[in-house]
Length: 590
Image 1 (cartoon, one colour):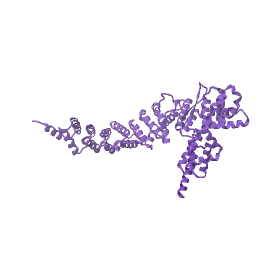
Image 2 (cartoon, rainbow, N blue to C red):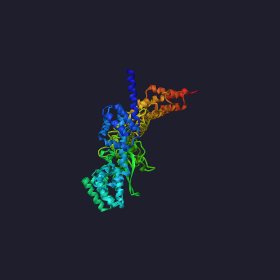
Image 3 (cartoon, rainbow, N blue to C red):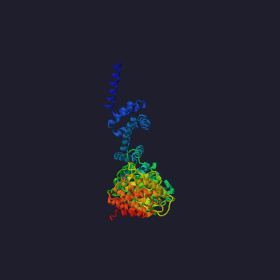
């Protein structure tokens, strides 16, 4: 009996799977999904959610079903936000994604938008319904509304479209701002009025630009009136400053500037003077804000070519956009230079601005790019540039990201500073840490490259006898580096130690030269460094090492090049003549 019941349950379950997968309509699967979710039968709810997705549903149809059942849609949202079953959450997210796709299709459909624009001139009820749907269409409605306004054959619709345009709301501002470049004075006047009625601050710089640059007294007056509707204080600020503030808001991802959530892309709007209409370019949401920051900065410079702060923010935004790892949008055009090209061309003042922005935001990518560009172009004076009370590059010495710290230290050291500054010990500390880095995989740090660059810049400091950056604090690390597996690091460490007036430094060089485990090239280089050390500091070696060097010089069995290098080092030590006498007599034949 038990076995028969078991078989019956299995058969029933099998029939349920079949019923979920085949023959049901989208509406039935949708309703069953909501029903079983509501009563807590999550196993069945997942089956019906899967059936909804596998039926390749029409996004518009699923959107309509969700709108017909607001309580059911609310259940779906709760599942996505708080359900404990991870599989059900994932399936529900996919269902919600199809609904959002339907919402986007409907609101961006040119045919639907066109019909709703015409309905504005119909009955009062139709007019109210039309403006509601145009609000849903948001930015996508604006080009068609402007086209209708510019069409002289539709002039009877003009008053109704003018009435509806500002009611689109905040979503309309970006395309309307782009459309201010139209040469149609009448159309431009209505755009200005609409921006004033929408009453969002992001319109302010564009309106102030008209006051400052437009040749039409009427348009300048209208722009002034619209600014008063939004923020009268903005009349006292220059357009360049207002554009810069807008750029900062985009850079800082102000919520009021976020693109619509119903698509996985965002739109950047342009005015096409040839077509006399708006055009849009879809861009990835991940760098939309940075691209808009760049555009705001470009407008700031159009308003005032001397507004230099916009250049620094533009550079920071471009570096930040590149960090998304995506190609730049099509409107950049072929052959558009990368951010580093602009950065090295811009010069230290603007790079410091970009670096200050990156330090403020704790953005390692932007900070590193700015520092590397500074290292390429800046000298001592410009590297230690001040923005108000702070010096960005010196701040970078304490940045959270080690690559930024190391690059900042290398940049400062490479400039060979001659004036003392409090952070000079931090420079040595970071150079030392960089030298200690092992050649391991790290996300933001090429360890071998930083170790080598650090050693090279320390050698330059040593050779120029820099009095500001004291390398003696790095002596212990440099001594360890003489045993490094990387030949370049070994050689450079020995060369740097030659300039330190310390017995331990000179003895470490001698040990490297005498170590038979080292390659011939390393040993010869070490003897060359020992000769430099001896010339600068005299002999600081103990008798044991001196005897070991002498034995190499007196030997006829070692490589002639090594023997010659050892002899040169020995001679530079300027020791008492007894050993030299012994060397001469040892080879005498008579």
